[in-house]
Length: 441
Image 1 (spheres, one colour):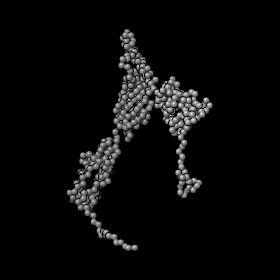
Image 2 (cartoon, one colour; image 1 turned 90 degrees about the vertical axis):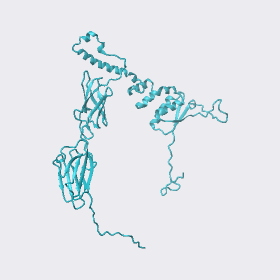
Image 3 (cartoon, helix red, strand yellow; image 1 turned 90 degrees about the horizontal axis):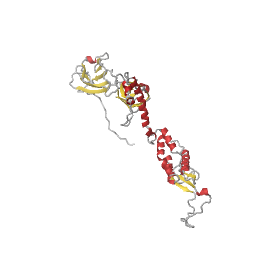
């Protein structure tokens, strides 16, 4: 084998050249771009001379948020019990202990200027870190969105331990005391459900108890409470149903203590709530807005013939098309539409068993006719072909729909589904036996 000579590099000695270099800023605590730094943290840093001269303490200055914190010595504002200055042959370590903690979420900017002894080349670096969140959340807004629902907002995302953490107290009279039964938090917004209904236009005080932000800061007075008004449902503009004005004038004039007015005000609230329920009657028979129990009644009133378990949306859809289904009952298009609507299954074809039999006036003798069955059942029997394989539940429901919608004298005898795809038996080298487990395809 031929030998190949490669070039080589030999190093005899290494000499470090440090002349003209500024000191290095290292070991910063907190470090640059640190977040969630405790507000009581000290600020520590080290300056290192890469050469033999050492760091000039007299030329070293440190500013924190624009305030001079070190100028050869630690200034009074940063001379807490943890403050220290340690100087060695090539290192200067400075620890600043602020007398006052940093502000919550404050961005602290530190600037360091220093030089080597006997040199005019300086280091001038600036870095920053962010203090932790120590600001308590504030309750900023609240509104009643319904007779039993409230929406409240904080100034930051919060955690609500439970509905018991939201306390409601009436401030005006008459007003019904209510309590929160559920609370759903979405960031800084909380949806609250209360029981019973809020008194319309009554003043309530909402107080947040043990509600914290994502950092664990608990809400503090006076930002833990607010006032809101009870929800008043919409009512006709021309309606006037004031019980007090309906009383005789001499009864109102004789009410010097105001007891009668307060009693009538209690009755007025009950009357207003009853009128609200009366105003909602049209919603009960509206297919798009009716509550689910009334949807069941609507379907029963329409004579729903399908014994299926449907969700609310399917019930609304069925109630809206059931009359049209009745109109198409007894037709092939009606069967197809109903199966598509109720099951989501496409019917490919509806085929009679005697479709090729002789049709008077149309069939030609000896060309396009066959002798039909003499049995009446067979003459009116048919099969249905679907586009996909059905489950057992779908087969049962399809038969129920077809049996109801087909013409009364016909007979549904067969459901034709596509066969499952055949997986070919591939020929695998080393595994298949020729003539036994090999299949050419």
